[in-house]
Length: 321
Image (tube, rainbow, N blue to C red; front, side, top):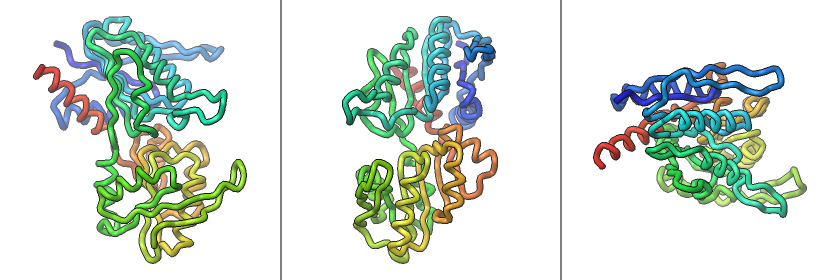
C-alpha cells in the first residue's frame, strides 16, 4: 500500500510541511508531499492540476478557509482528489473562517459559517469517507452544520496554551476575558489552570463604541492574561487591556488560538504599549508570516502536532477495526 498523499492550498504549504515532519518524527508515519501545478489567468481565474497520483490512495489535504480564495481552492482541490480516485480524504482545517457568523441576529443576515460547512459537505465522498479536522472553532456547535455522511472532529489548542501559560510567573496570574461573551470559555480554562478568572462587562455607546462598566475580580498588582479564541483587529483586546491596567494590573498578556491579525492589526497591538506579549498558535497564515518576519512580542505555538496526533489515532482505529 502506498504512503498517504499530502496536499495543501498555497497559503498552508509550510503548515503541511510541518505536519509531514511531525507525522514522521512522532508516529513513524511517512507521507508523500504531493505536487500541484497552479497558475492564474489574466482574468483572475485559477488553474490547478494535481501532478501526484491520487488513485486508490489516502489523501490528506491541508487548508484553512480564511478567505474566499482559500475556501474555493480547498474545495476545488478536494473535489479533484475524489474525482481522480482518492480512497480516503482527510481534510485538516487549521483555521475555519467566517465562524463568527454562526447565527443570524437580524433578519436577512447570511449565516456564513453554515454556508461554508454546506459547501465543504458537498465535496464528493471518497470510498473510505471524508473526514474533517477543525481546530478551535468559535462555536462548539459548528461541526453540526456539516451535512450528510461527513465526519467532523473538533480539535482543541488548549493543551498547547495551558502548557505555555503555566510558565508565566509560575502560573501566578489572573485569566481575563475581553467581554462577558467569552466568560464560559475563560472560566473553563481558568479552572483547568487553577487560576482566578476576571470578567469585564461593557456597555455599548454607539454602533462602533463601547465602554467598560464593571470588573468582577481584583487584579491590582497581578499579571493578567487575556484569553480569546481569535485576535483580529485587536480593538476589544486593547480596550480590555486598558481596563485591567486601570484596575491596577502590573502587566497584561494576550493568548489566543488563532492570530488572524489582518494588515495593520499587529502594528496596532505592538505600538499600544499595553501588552507584554501575545501568545498564539501558528494556525493562521498571517500569524506565520508575522512570525517569519520576526515580529517582536509575538510567540507562536506549533499546532500541526495536534492534527498529526488525530490523523495517527484514526489510522490506528482503522487497523484495529
